[in-house]
Length: 385
Ligand SMILES: NC(=O)c1ccc[n+]([C@@H]2O[C@H](COP(=O)([O-])OP(=O)(O)OC[C@H]3O[C@@H](n4cnc5c(N)ncnc54)[C@H](O)[C@@H]3O)[C@@H](O)[C@H]2O)c1
Ligand SMILES: O=C(O)[C@H](O)COP(=O)(O)O
Image (cartoon, rainbow, N blue to C red; front, side, top):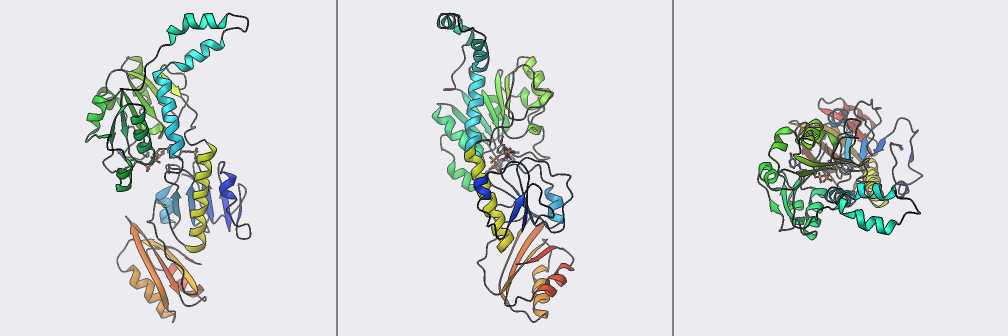
Protein backbone atom coordinates (compact mmCIF):
# COMPACT_ATOMS: atom_id res chain seq x y z
CA UNK A 1 0.00 0.00 0.00
CA UNK A 2 1.11 3.53 -0.79
CA UNK A 3 1.15 6.23 1.87
CA UNK A 4 1.81 9.80 0.79
CA UNK A 5 3.38 12.07 3.39
CA UNK A 6 2.90 15.80 3.70
CA UNK A 7 4.90 17.78 6.29
CA UNK A 8 7.39 16.32 8.72
CA UNK A 9 5.91 13.16 10.22
CA UNK A 10 8.01 11.77 13.08
CA UNK A 11 10.19 8.79 12.04
CA UNK A 12 9.19 7.07 15.34
CA UNK A 13 5.68 6.74 13.92
CA UNK A 14 6.77 5.88 10.38
CA UNK A 15 8.93 3.06 11.75
CA UNK A 16 5.70 1.27 12.72
CA UNK A 17 4.80 0.72 9.06
CA UNK A 18 5.41 -2.87 8.08
CA UNK A 19 7.82 -2.42 5.13
CA UNK A 20 6.60 -5.54 3.34
CA UNK A 21 3.14 -4.01 3.04
CA UNK A 22 3.74 -0.25 2.93
CA UNK A 23 5.68 2.19 0.82
CA UNK A 24 5.66 5.74 2.14
CA UNK A 25 7.17 9.08 1.19
CA UNK A 26 6.52 12.51 -0.21
CA UNK A 27 6.86 11.32 -3.82
CA UNK A 28 4.41 8.41 -3.63
CA UNK A 29 1.73 8.50 -6.35
CA UNK A 30 -1.84 7.16 -6.28
CA UNK A 31 -1.80 6.76 -2.51
CA UNK A 32 -4.14 4.48 -0.53
CA UNK A 33 -3.59 6.77 2.45
CA UNK A 34 -2.28 10.22 3.26
CA UNK A 35 -0.54 11.38 6.44
CA UNK A 36 -0.56 15.14 6.87
CA UNK A 37 -0.05 17.85 9.48
CA UNK A 38 -0.86 21.46 8.53
CA UNK A 39 -0.46 21.29 4.74
CA UNK A 40 -3.62 22.62 3.10
CA UNK A 41 -5.34 19.86 1.16
CA UNK A 42 -8.62 21.78 0.80
CA UNK A 43 -8.39 22.20 -2.98
CA UNK A 44 -6.57 18.99 -3.79
CA UNK A 45 -7.95 16.48 -6.31
CA UNK A 46 -7.85 12.96 -4.85
CA UNK A 47 -7.14 9.71 -6.72
CA UNK A 48 -9.79 6.95 -6.76
CA UNK A 49 -7.61 4.56 -4.74
CA UNK A 50 -7.39 6.97 -1.79
CA UNK A 51 -9.21 5.54 1.24
CA UNK A 52 -7.95 7.51 4.23
CA UNK A 53 -6.41 10.81 5.25
CA UNK A 54 -4.97 11.05 8.74
CA UNK A 55 -4.18 14.46 10.20
CA UNK A 56 -1.32 13.82 12.64
CA UNK A 57 -2.60 16.46 15.03
CA UNK A 58 -5.88 18.03 16.10
CA UNK A 59 -7.18 20.68 13.68
CA UNK A 60 -8.80 19.37 10.50
CA UNK A 61 -9.67 22.69 8.86
CA UNK A 62 -6.97 21.94 6.26
CA UNK A 63 -8.99 18.95 4.94
CA UNK A 64 -12.03 19.11 2.63
CA UNK A 65 -14.11 16.84 4.90
CA UNK A 66 -17.40 17.11 2.98
CA UNK A 67 -15.72 16.37 -0.34
CA UNK A 68 -13.86 13.43 1.20
CA UNK A 69 -17.10 11.98 2.60
CA UNK A 70 -18.73 12.16 -0.82
CA UNK A 71 -15.71 10.34 -2.28
CA UNK A 72 -15.83 7.68 0.45
CA UNK A 73 -12.53 8.81 1.98
CA UNK A 74 -12.31 8.46 5.76
CA UNK A 75 -10.66 11.42 7.53
CA UNK A 76 -8.98 10.95 10.90
CA UNK A 77 -7.11 13.04 13.45
CA UNK A 78 -5.15 12.15 16.59
CA UNK A 79 -7.12 13.73 19.45
CA UNK A 80 -5.12 14.82 22.47
CA UNK A 81 -1.77 13.62 21.10
CA UNK A 82 -0.25 17.11 21.07
CA UNK A 83 -2.30 18.68 23.88
CA UNK A 84 0.46 18.73 26.47
CA UNK A 85 2.86 20.56 24.16
CA UNK A 86 0.24 23.21 23.41
CA UNK A 87 -0.67 23.57 27.10
CA UNK A 88 2.93 24.32 28.04
CA UNK A 89 3.32 26.93 25.28
CA UNK A 90 0.09 28.64 26.36
CA UNK A 91 1.71 29.26 29.74
CA UNK A 92 4.85 30.57 28.05
CA UNK A 93 2.53 32.95 26.17
CA UNK A 94 0.75 34.01 29.34
CA UNK A 95 4.05 34.65 31.12
CA UNK A 96 5.39 36.64 28.14
CA UNK A 97 2.33 38.87 28.45
CA UNK A 98 2.49 39.16 32.24
CA UNK A 99 6.23 39.87 32.44
CA UNK A 100 8.08 41.94 29.79
CA UNK A 101 10.72 39.23 29.48
CA UNK A 102 11.09 39.60 25.71
CA UNK A 103 11.78 43.35 25.79
CA UNK A 104 13.99 42.92 28.83
CA UNK A 105 16.09 40.26 27.09
CA UNK A 106 16.38 42.42 24.00
CA UNK A 107 17.53 45.33 26.15
CA UNK A 108 20.10 43.29 28.08
CA UNK A 109 21.51 41.90 24.84
CA UNK A 110 22.35 45.49 23.78
CA UNK A 111 24.87 45.76 26.62
CA UNK A 112 28.52 45.26 25.76
CA UNK A 113 30.83 42.63 27.30
CA UNK A 114 33.04 45.32 28.83
CA UNK A 115 30.09 47.19 30.41
CA UNK A 116 29.56 46.83 34.16
CA UNK A 117 26.64 44.55 33.33
CA UNK A 118 25.58 43.60 36.86
CA UNK A 119 25.48 47.23 38.04
CA UNK A 120 23.55 48.41 34.96
CA UNK A 121 21.10 45.50 35.28
CA UNK A 122 20.32 46.28 38.93
CA UNK A 123 19.85 49.97 38.08
CA UNK A 124 17.61 49.48 35.06
CA UNK A 125 15.55 46.39 35.97
CA UNK A 126 12.72 48.50 37.35
CA UNK A 127 11.88 49.34 33.71
CA UNK A 128 10.81 45.74 33.22
CA UNK A 129 8.50 45.04 36.11
CA UNK A 130 5.55 42.77 35.37
CA UNK A 131 2.66 41.00 37.02
CA UNK A 132 2.21 37.56 38.55
CA UNK A 133 -0.34 35.09 37.24
CA UNK A 134 -1.33 34.07 40.77
CA UNK A 135 -4.67 35.53 41.74
CA UNK A 136 -5.60 36.50 38.16
CA UNK A 137 -8.65 35.15 36.38
CA UNK A 138 -8.24 32.95 33.32
CA UNK A 139 -11.13 32.23 30.95
CA UNK A 140 -10.90 29.21 28.68
CA UNK A 141 -13.16 28.86 25.66
CA UNK A 142 -13.32 25.20 24.59
CA UNK A 143 -12.75 22.51 27.21
CA UNK A 144 -11.38 19.75 25.01
CA UNK A 145 -8.00 18.02 25.18
CA UNK A 146 -6.04 21.29 25.39
CA UNK A 147 -8.52 23.53 27.23
CA UNK A 148 -8.80 21.07 30.11
CA UNK A 149 -5.04 20.77 30.53
CA UNK A 150 -4.66 24.56 30.50
CA UNK A 151 -7.48 24.93 33.05
CA UNK A 152 -6.07 22.36 35.45
CA UNK A 153 -2.51 23.70 35.27
CA UNK A 154 -3.68 27.29 35.78
CA UNK A 155 -5.08 26.24 39.16
CA UNK A 156 -1.55 25.23 40.18
CA UNK A 157 -0.38 28.73 39.22
CA UNK A 158 -2.94 30.02 41.74
CA UNK A 159 -5.24 31.42 39.04
CA UNK A 160 -9.02 31.48 39.28
CA UNK A 161 -10.28 29.62 36.24
CA UNK A 162 -13.50 29.94 34.25
CA UNK A 163 -14.34 27.51 31.45
CA UNK A 164 -16.94 27.75 28.69
CA UNK A 165 -17.90 24.82 26.46
CA UNK A 166 -21.58 24.06 25.74
CA UNK A 167 -20.57 20.81 23.99
CA UNK A 168 -18.14 19.45 26.59
CA UNK A 169 -17.83 15.66 26.37
CA UNK A 170 -18.43 13.44 29.39
CA UNK A 171 -14.83 12.22 29.25
CA UNK A 172 -13.57 15.78 29.24
CA UNK A 173 -15.84 16.79 32.12
CA UNK A 174 -14.41 13.95 34.24
CA UNK A 175 -10.88 15.24 33.67
CA UNK A 176 -11.67 18.86 34.56
CA UNK A 177 -10.85 19.92 38.13
CA UNK A 178 -13.92 20.71 40.20
CA UNK A 179 -12.23 23.99 41.11
CA UNK A 180 -12.79 25.30 37.58
CA UNK A 181 -15.87 27.54 37.45
CA UNK A 182 -18.19 26.53 34.66
CA UNK A 183 -19.25 29.69 32.79
CA UNK A 184 -22.77 29.35 31.39
CA UNK A 185 -22.26 32.14 28.91
CA UNK A 186 -19.34 33.73 27.12
CA UNK A 187 -20.44 37.07 28.55
CA UNK A 188 -19.80 35.80 32.09
CA UNK A 189 -16.30 34.72 31.10
CA UNK A 190 -15.58 37.96 29.22
CA UNK A 191 -16.70 40.15 32.15
CA UNK A 192 -14.55 38.38 34.72
CA UNK A 193 -11.29 37.32 33.13
CA UNK A 194 -7.87 38.95 32.87
CA UNK A 195 -6.61 36.32 30.41
CA UNK A 196 -8.79 34.65 27.77
CA UNK A 197 -7.48 31.59 25.94
CA UNK A 198 -9.32 30.12 22.96
CA UNK A 199 -9.21 26.34 22.35
CA UNK A 200 -11.99 25.55 19.87
CA UNK A 201 -11.78 24.20 16.31
CA UNK A 202 -12.09 26.68 13.44
CA UNK A 203 -15.42 26.24 11.64
CA UNK A 204 -18.06 28.42 10.02
CA UNK A 205 -19.63 28.74 13.48
CA UNK A 206 -16.47 29.76 15.34
CA UNK A 207 -14.84 31.97 12.69
CA UNK A 208 -14.14 35.47 14.08
CA UNK A 209 -15.78 34.57 17.40
CA UNK A 210 -13.40 37.03 19.08
CA UNK A 211 -14.61 40.19 17.36
CA UNK A 212 -15.18 43.80 18.38
CA UNK A 213 -18.50 42.92 20.08
CA UNK A 214 -16.83 40.23 22.18
CA UNK A 215 -13.88 42.48 23.01
CA UNK A 216 -16.23 45.26 24.15
CA UNK A 217 -17.57 42.87 26.81
CA UNK A 218 -14.08 42.02 28.12
CA UNK A 219 -12.29 43.62 31.06
CA UNK A 220 -9.91 46.49 30.34
CA UNK A 221 -6.28 45.41 29.92
CA UNK A 222 -7.28 41.84 29.04
CA UNK A 223 -4.78 39.51 27.38
CA UNK A 224 -6.18 37.30 24.58
CA UNK A 225 -4.33 34.09 23.76
CA UNK A 226 -4.91 32.18 20.54
CA UNK A 227 -3.20 28.82 20.18
CA UNK A 228 -6.14 27.37 18.21
CA UNK A 229 -6.45 29.03 14.76
CA UNK A 230 -5.93 32.56 13.41
CA UNK A 231 -9.39 32.63 11.84
CA UNK A 232 -11.08 32.50 15.26
CA UNK A 233 -10.05 36.09 15.92
CA UNK A 234 -10.96 39.24 14.03
CA UNK A 235 -7.41 40.52 14.03
CA UNK A 236 -8.25 44.05 12.98
CA UNK A 237 -10.63 44.34 15.94
CA UNK A 238 -7.90 43.13 18.30
CA UNK A 239 -5.23 45.44 16.90
CA UNK A 240 -7.65 48.40 17.16
CA UNK A 241 -8.51 47.41 20.73
CA UNK A 242 -4.80 47.30 21.65
CA UNK A 243 -4.32 50.76 20.11
CA UNK A 244 -7.32 52.02 22.10
CA UNK A 245 -5.83 50.64 25.35
CA UNK A 246 -8.65 48.13 25.88
CA UNK A 247 -6.59 44.97 25.21
CA UNK A 248 -3.09 44.61 26.66
CA UNK A 249 -1.73 41.82 24.47
CA UNK A 250 -2.77 39.40 21.77
CA UNK A 251 -0.61 36.28 21.97
CA UNK A 252 -0.97 34.21 18.82
CA UNK A 253 0.54 31.03 17.40
CA UNK A 254 -0.71 32.14 13.94
CA UNK A 255 1.17 35.21 12.76
CA UNK A 256 0.61 36.88 9.40
CA UNK A 257 1.86 40.04 7.70
CA UNK A 258 -1.00 42.17 9.06
CA UNK A 259 -0.20 41.59 12.73
CA UNK A 260 3.48 40.70 12.70
CA UNK A 261 4.69 44.10 13.87
CA UNK A 262 1.50 45.40 15.44
CA UNK A 263 1.81 46.94 18.90
CA UNK A 264 1.03 44.53 21.75
CA UNK A 265 0.86 41.47 19.50
CA UNK A 266 3.12 38.61 20.57
CA UNK A 267 3.71 36.30 17.59
CA UNK A 268 4.86 32.70 17.87
CA UNK A 269 5.46 30.80 14.60
CA UNK A 270 2.90 27.98 15.07
CA UNK A 271 5.03 26.08 17.58
CA UNK A 272 2.18 24.69 19.73
CA UNK A 273 2.74 21.08 18.73
CA UNK A 274 6.40 21.35 17.78
CA UNK A 275 8.06 19.14 20.36
CA UNK A 276 9.56 15.74 19.60
CA UNK A 277 7.28 14.24 22.24
CA UNK A 278 4.11 15.55 20.66
CA UNK A 279 5.27 14.86 17.08
CA UNK A 280 5.98 11.25 18.09
CA UNK A 281 2.63 10.84 19.86
CA UNK A 282 0.77 12.19 16.83
CA UNK A 283 2.72 10.08 14.32
CA UNK A 284 2.37 6.87 16.35
CA UNK A 285 -1.37 7.34 16.73
CA UNK A 286 -1.74 8.28 13.06
CA UNK A 287 0.19 5.25 11.79
CA UNK A 288 -1.67 2.85 14.13
CA UNK A 289 -5.01 4.24 12.99
CA UNK A 290 -4.28 4.17 9.27
CA UNK A 291 -2.87 0.62 9.38
CA UNK A 292 -5.85 -0.78 11.25
CA UNK A 293 -8.16 0.96 8.80
CA UNK A 294 -6.36 -0.01 5.59
CA UNK A 295 -5.83 -3.62 6.68
CA UNK A 296 -8.95 -4.36 8.75
CA UNK A 297 -11.37 -1.53 8.01
CA UNK A 298 -11.54 -0.59 11.71
CA UNK A 299 -12.10 3.09 12.39
CA UNK A 300 -10.78 4.99 15.39
CA UNK A 301 -10.87 8.80 15.70
CA UNK A 302 -12.44 9.62 12.38
CA UNK A 303 -14.02 13.03 11.92
CA UNK A 304 -16.52 11.94 9.26
CA UNK A 305 -17.44 8.43 10.48
CA UNK A 306 -17.98 6.92 13.94
CA UNK A 307 -15.59 4.55 15.71
CA UNK A 308 -16.19 1.05 14.31
CA UNK A 309 -14.32 -2.07 15.38
CA UNK A 310 -15.06 -5.72 14.67
CA UNK A 311 -12.73 -8.66 15.27
CA UNK A 312 -12.13 -10.52 12.01
CA UNK A 313 -14.01 -13.68 11.11
CA UNK A 314 -14.78 -15.53 7.87
CA UNK A 315 -12.67 -15.50 4.69
CA UNK A 316 -12.95 -11.89 3.57
CA UNK A 317 -14.19 -8.56 4.87
CA UNK A 318 -16.22 -6.11 2.79
CA UNK A 319 -16.13 -2.48 3.98
CA UNK A 320 -18.79 -0.09 2.76
CA UNK A 321 -18.83 3.72 3.20
CA UNK A 322 -22.38 4.88 2.42
CA UNK A 323 -24.94 7.56 3.04
CA UNK A 324 -27.00 7.27 6.21
CA UNK A 325 -30.15 6.37 4.23
CA UNK A 326 -33.03 3.92 4.80
CA UNK A 327 -32.84 0.33 3.56
CA UNK A 328 -29.05 0.20 3.21
CA UNK A 329 -28.41 -2.89 5.34
CA UNK A 330 -31.20 -4.77 3.54
CA UNK A 331 -29.73 -3.89 0.13
CA UNK A 332 -26.21 -4.83 1.21
CA UNK A 333 -27.14 -8.19 2.75
CA UNK A 334 -29.44 -9.04 -0.18
CA UNK A 335 -26.69 -8.33 -2.72
CA UNK A 336 -24.27 -10.55 -0.81
CA UNK A 337 -26.69 -13.46 -0.26
CA UNK A 338 -27.85 -13.32 -3.91
CA UNK A 339 -24.30 -14.45 -4.78
CA UNK A 340 -24.68 -17.44 -2.45
CA UNK A 341 -22.22 -15.94 0.03
CA UNK A 342 -22.87 -16.40 3.72
CA UNK A 343 -22.48 -13.50 6.14
CA UNK A 344 -20.44 -14.44 9.21
CA UNK A 345 -20.63 -11.11 11.00
CA UNK A 346 -21.80 -7.58 10.34
CA UNK A 347 -21.51 -4.16 11.97
CA UNK A 348 -23.15 -0.89 10.94
CA UNK A 349 -22.75 2.55 12.50
CA UNK A 350 -23.68 6.04 11.42
CA UNK A 351 -22.54 9.60 12.08
CA UNK A 352 -24.74 12.44 10.84
CA UNK A 353 -25.25 12.01 7.07
CA UNK A 354 -22.86 9.08 6.59
CA UNK A 355 -22.62 5.46 7.71
CA UNK A 356 -20.21 2.56 7.55
CA UNK A 357 -20.90 -1.15 7.30
CA UNK A 358 -18.40 -4.00 7.58
CA UNK A 359 -19.42 -7.50 6.59
CA UNK A 360 -17.32 -10.61 7.18
CA UNK A 361 -18.20 -13.32 4.67
CA UNK A 362 -17.37 -17.00 4.22
CA UNK A 363 -15.86 -16.64 0.74
CA UNK A 364 -12.69 -15.06 -0.65
CA UNK A 365 -14.36 -14.70 -4.04
CA UNK A 366 -15.98 -11.29 -3.54
CA UNK A 367 -14.98 -9.27 -6.64
CA UNK A 368 -18.43 -9.50 -8.23
CA UNK A 369 -20.25 -8.63 -5.06
CA UNK A 370 -17.97 -5.60 -4.58
CA UNK A 371 -18.80 -4.43 -8.12
CA UNK A 372 -22.54 -4.82 -7.54
CA UNK A 373 -22.48 -3.10 -4.18
CA UNK A 374 -20.63 -0.17 -5.77
CA UNK A 375 -23.57 0.34 -8.15
CA UNK A 376 -26.08 0.87 -5.33
CA UNK A 377 -27.18 4.45 -5.03
CA UNK A 378 -25.97 5.95 -1.75
CA UNK A 379 -22.93 3.68 -1.58
CA UNK A 380 -19.79 5.81 -1.84
CA UNK A 381 -16.95 3.30 -1.59
CA UNK A 382 -16.66 -0.47 -1.29
CA UNK A 383 -13.39 -2.21 -0.49
CA UNK A 384 -12.72 -5.89 0.14
CA UNK A 385 -9.96 -6.79 2.56
N1 LIG B 1 -1.17 25.69 18.05
C1 LIG B 1 -1.09 24.41 17.76
O1 LIG B 1 -0.05 23.91 17.35
C2 LIG B 1 -2.29 23.54 17.96
C3 LIG B 1 -2.13 22.20 18.35
C4 LIG B 1 -3.27 21.43 18.55
C5 LIG B 1 -4.51 21.97 18.34
N2 LIG B 1 -4.63 23.24 17.91
C6 LIG B 1 -5.95 23.84 17.67
O2 LIG B 1 -6.66 23.80 18.89
C7 LIG B 1 -7.97 23.31 18.65
C8 LIG B 1 -8.44 22.56 19.87
O3 LIG B 1 -7.65 21.42 20.06
P1 LIG B 1 -8.08 20.26 21.07
O4 LIG B 1 -7.08 19.18 20.91
O5 LIG B 1 -8.34 20.82 22.42
O6 LIG B 1 -9.46 19.82 20.40
P2 LIG B 1 -10.71 19.11 21.08
O7 LIG B 1 -11.56 18.65 19.96
O8 LIG B 1 -10.26 18.12 22.09
O9 LIG B 1 -11.46 20.28 21.85
C9 LIG B 1 -12.20 21.28 21.25
C10 LIG B 1 -13.29 21.69 22.22
O10 LIG B 1 -13.93 22.86 21.72
C11 LIG B 1 -15.31 22.77 22.06
N3 LIG B 1 -16.07 23.70 21.24
C12 LIG B 1 -16.43 23.58 19.94
N4 LIG B 1 -17.10 24.67 19.56
C13 LIG B 1 -17.19 25.49 20.63
C14 LIG B 1 -17.76 26.77 20.86
N5 LIG B 1 -18.40 27.43 19.89
N6 LIG B 1 -17.66 27.31 22.09
C15 LIG B 1 -17.02 26.65 23.09
N7 LIG B 1 -16.46 25.45 22.94
C16 LIG B 1 -16.54 24.87 21.72
C17 LIG B 1 -15.64 21.30 21.84
O11 LIG B 1 -16.80 20.93 22.54
C18 LIG B 1 -14.39 20.63 22.39
O12 LIG B 1 -14.55 20.30 23.76
C19 LIG B 1 -7.82 22.43 17.40
O13 LIG B 1 -9.04 22.34 16.69
C20 LIG B 1 -6.75 23.11 16.62
O14 LIG B 1 -7.32 24.04 15.73
C21 LIG B 1 -3.55 24.04 17.72
O1 LIG C 1 -4.04 21.35 14.97
C1 LIG C 1 -2.92 20.95 15.31
O2 LIG C 1 -2.69 19.80 15.71
C2 LIG C 1 -1.81 21.94 15.34
O3 LIG C 1 -2.11 23.14 14.75
C3 LIG C 1 -0.45 21.41 15.05
O4 LIG C 1 -0.06 21.65 13.73
P1 LIG C 1 1.30 20.99 13.18
O5 LIG C 1 1.11 19.52 13.21
O6 LIG C 1 1.48 21.54 11.82
O7 LIG C 1 2.40 21.42 14.12
